[in-house]
Image 1 (cartoon, rainbow, N blue to C red):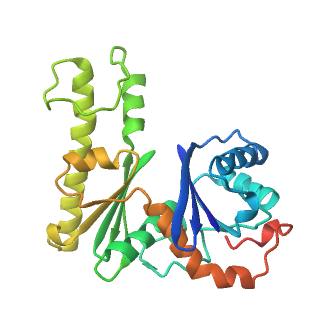
Image 2: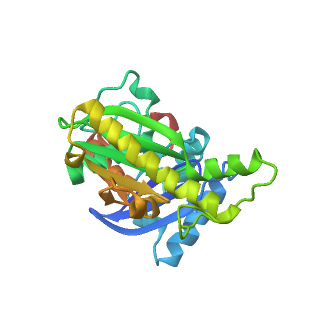
Image 3: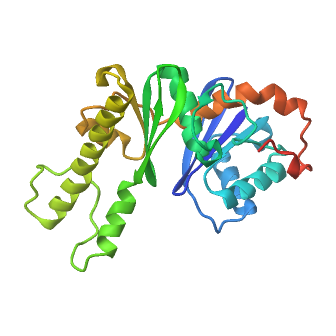
Length: 275
């Protein structure tokens, strides 16, 4: 079985594949203070809850935007699963042309999402990921990764609003009854939800215009925590796929599996990783 980790700034999404089928998946909090032993024991508990064993895992792939956690998980995989993981980064085959000034600057999660979306939805594409940051990734009709945009995530925006104002409360992120709020809480909720819908629709419109495409010809795929909520009130999001990153990790693993095994990487060879 293939164990896949998508390590983000807020959450870590874990998937377990048997062949090409996702059999189990979990979401845990990203904690930079945890050691590899603590994460190893947590994985043991998750596995036990599904009747799984460490020995069921044949290989591991990791996508991470948190460098110190990349090292923690690399060590955890070597010690607990006896596997040197494949880490998404420079040197891996993605099957996708990247037209970015400095490809090394692109977060691994954005590359993985793009690979999965092209495989599943074709092109042209705009991929939205509602995480700690809200990211837009743009794929043209030639299936080339062109770049995109990054905006503060909804959670960051809410926290900044509360921290930088004296009288505004922190509110639950939920859909208000009306755009025009009649209370401070509903006004904040409206600004966050409908403001982000406006951000999404406005950016999609501008991207399509810049590329010279008809907006209706671009598939807009959303993933991440609030993707479903924003989709329900957006005019431009056409697909929601919460397993997009895990699917991308599976695809990238298959495209690098033979090379990874040919390298003969062993758990003791920590520096022998491909990234």
